[in-house]
Length: 340
Ligand SMILES: [Zn+2]
Image: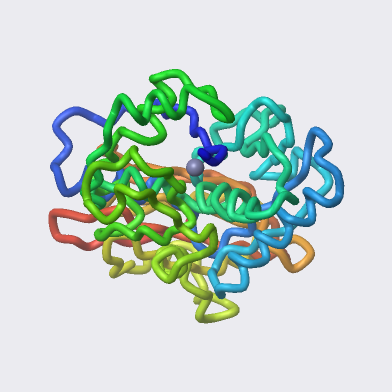
């Protein structure tokens, strides 16, 4: 019997500038959907679902959180404050926006949906899986490193039947299509990942040991945990170093790495935060409110010939955080950040 499967909507890939160097492109594809680390992600529940369903989702957020990752999940009641808006519309399947793609979803729309009962046995894995997407993870059974050879027509036929009732396109997008090597969650296939689906016998031709089916346990595997901690390492310092206006700070970052700074403005005025050098980066300014960093402004210059530049009104007496995550650098390899 086939399980009910998560179905991601096809993504409109960003239009990259033509002629980007392969290394630059690969760093972008691999990192552009990841959140800036030390972001507080606010989630809220929409469209009913009921307390029991909510509790399953809350417990799963906690489980990811308790790995010690640098992201923080906080439930809020107001959808306008929530980056992650979770619906429980049955008949719409289970799915989620992947990582920062959630920011491109209109405030009235869901970024995640659960289309069936999460309190049923074994369904906790569904919630862990969707939160994995929200962290930026894709489907493990689509890893190009899995070496899975499908009986394509058997897969189409199986998924066209109950309980999924998928058309060929949806099946292709969510099962048969191989991810690019830069999109995959890791450089080796992890058959135990919570990001993989279970498959009944007769769908996988190779490797031979999976002809009888593939049954990931629906819990976080060690590679899942490694992935989350690699992209979202625990915050090392409570208070990052100061970014003093008009003093540029060399970043010295490798691809995927992040630098964090504190800004305590001496005046209330419009400030600019910008990066320098040959690099692709995402820069986000947070304002501390009630002890919590709230997103204020951000700029992603990935794949463009420009540097990131943010204008924001900073208020004297308040505290701000500037976080820079580098995708890639070239030329001298040197990049810097300044606030002025
Ligand atoms: Zn999925």
